Each structure stands twice: as structure tokens, then as C-alpha cells.
Image (tube, rainbow, N blue to C red; front, side, top):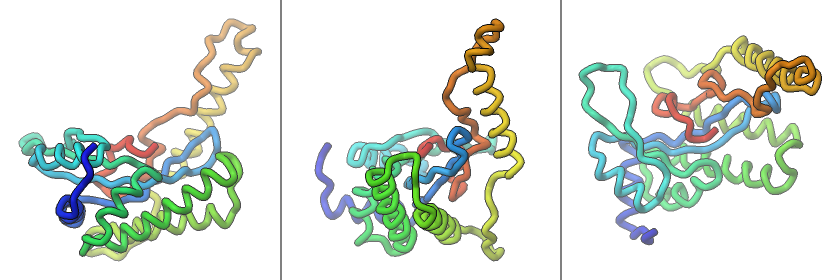
Length: 214
């Protein structure tokens, strides 16, 4: 992978400022009965070549953008490496950002927290204060990315009832995969938690169709 020049970082920062989104996203995991968080950058454009250039330099994914309009022109999304692996790209563009500097700083703070959480105590146990900080960074980013003229409202982009249904579904699948279920001839199901779009709670509309961080 070639080493980006200063002009590459500056141009990429301009793309993120004008055509991109720096998001903190979260997903509800029924098996662990909690939210997990990550960081992602998405840049959208109708010129595929400029996004292919970003993909060559910083990897990630280059995918078609979805549109509900039947006559919409083709567009593309470049999605950065996610979670803690988004850090090199964010630190590289940070000196050149003019519009989304606050989003970048908050995302980098979240990454530091994710690194601390991942390597210090493992995946199951997390102090309540660290959980509070994760949730705080998430809502800060949601507010920074808020669009429109209406005042920002800290409202989840999913229904608590849906989470409750996911929990019940997961519990049901676990009971079907138990040894007793096998004894009575019931086909067991996978022990992996169900992954549905209902679980995703994204920080900005460009990520609404995205499986990038989960």
C-alpha cells in the first residue's frame, strides 16, 4: 500500500468535509444483552474513480450507494476500515479538516476508549463508567451529525420493543438448540446471535444500509 503524501491527506480531508460522514455507531447484541460501539467513515460520490483512489490508499470498502429514487444517477460509497482500525485515517486527515474537526476529535476519543476496553478487561466485563463514556461519545456524535432545522433530540433510531423481540427470539433459539431439544428430534439452530437490520442504530443516514461496523 503506497504511503499517502500530504496532498493526499489534504484532499481526503476535503472529501470527508464535503461528501463524508464520521460516525460512531452502535449495535444491540442480544446474546450479550448490551450495545457495542464502533467508529466508521463514509464518503459518497458519483465519481467512482476518486473513491477508488481512496480505497487504494486507505483500503476499506468501495460499494454502490443505494437510492430509493428510480431515476437516480449511480453513486458510490467508500467505507473506511472500522473500529480502532479507523484511527490511522482519522489522525491523518485531522490537521486538514475544516468542517468536521469536532466529529473527528470525538471519534478519536471513542477509539481510545475502545482500545482501553478491548485490551484491558476483555470482552465481557466493562466498568459502568466506561459504558457511560461510550454512550456519551455516541450521543455527542449523533448531535454533531444532526441535520435539518429542528432541534436535536436524543432519540434512539430503533424501537425498544424491537430489542425486546430480538431478546425473546434469541432466547427461543437458544432453547431449541439445547440437548433436550435434540433428544426430542427438534433441529437445533445456530448458537450465533441473530443479526438483523433492526439491531443497527446508526449515527447518520449514509450508514443506514451499512453492515460496516457490526
